[in-house]
Length: 389
Image (cartoon, rainbow, N blue to C red; front, side, top):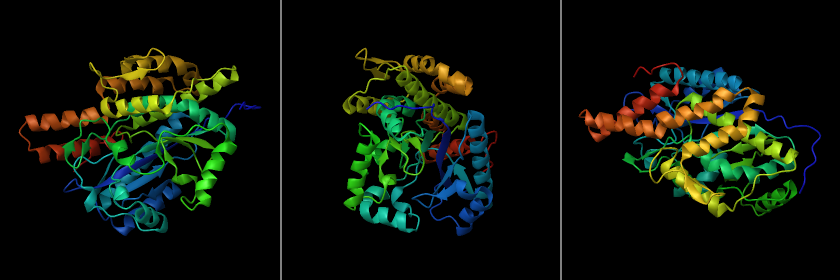
């Protein structure tokens, strides 16, 4: 269905990040933080900070941003503030999508009607949800345009995931994956790649059917990798691991924003990005989980046009050139080109494995090596600072 627009969407951005609260002595998760911690955070950050499903988690969200620098300043301020407050309670802040050695069955979920309902409905499946993520909102005011771009943007979700991988360890073991987070999250209902709809009305009919049946209360219970926000006129990219390095987060948010505008530019010129079957995109999604953006003989993602696996670095160069006009429009060329640095030095997942291997090589036990990984993550979470543990 064609969408007639009188003006270009705003393409504002907002970024949500989820973090772990870690006991400063053990480096394990803080299973039951003091009640005053969240209250102190709200004094400093107001509604930009909130609890998450697990008590050992905390979530932040920027206000509406119109530039990468605005988003950077807000993320830096929130991470620094949370880390400072956590220190008062003998905790530290850690940005990674899984903790290196924490056990899910030792955790407690946050009290409250929403979380209690989720815990009751999903039982052990949600008890295992010891994962953190990053969500990027892109402002697209027209309802039908959001649905149209959601279908086309799904193609790029594995490419975005590969730049953010930060969850190689699970319960003290190396999973062999760059991100194990989605392997946990995909056990929940209404997750994975988004459905393809022809219009906003069609999307709402499906959501309203689930609401009428009493399965969900609202659209926030659709936990797809990409979804129309139920609260704001945005498309919400949810596939990404949380980035340990704040500059990586800004890079991925900027690429997401530019991809949306690139797709809009195509339709403005009576063109569109091809919509591929979910079975194909799902294959790349798995490859991003398994191999990330690392180089190697069997790594890379499938180029559906060529029908072959292409090294991720080559695909990244194609994306950078594809969205360069949009990066110039938004003034974020340096931010999208930071992606080259990510794949050269490795995502958080590769760095965690390197820290672990170096610690073992220097005589550390596997447990102490995992503590070293936690120390590394804590030190890298707050921009410009080294954590004093």
